[in-house]
Amino acid sequence: MAGTGVVIVSHSAKLAEGLAEIVEEMNDGSVMIKAAGGADGGRIGTNALKIQNAIESMEDRDNILLYVDMGSSIISTEAAIDMLDDDLQEKVQIVDCPIVEGAFAGVVQATITDDVDEIIRVSKEAKELSKC
Image (cartoon, rainbow, N blue to C red; front, side):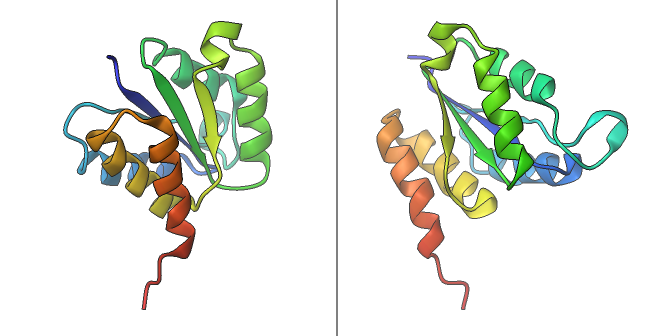
């Protein structure tokens, strides 16, 4: 099995890259992690083509999970998914969770299991984490 791919989509390239760096620390090498943040020219925003390219770079993965920050990142991610071929679209899911905590929990879980439903469940549980 090829395992899980994770794409981190944020309006900020720095946030996406920083979060990818953090979650990579928890990766045992079995999860492919890509950052797809920011708009062209280093501006704040999102870019559907950048997201599409990140997803397509993971086409050999069994599942590709997309962790997004808010607003137009969801719209751009949905547009990127629409541009994929049908077979690849079937492997891709947007995970509705807090981007930092959810991506962290999801990557940890993906190093333990390839069960995509379990990875998503654990990612979504991050909504309930108390920080105090």
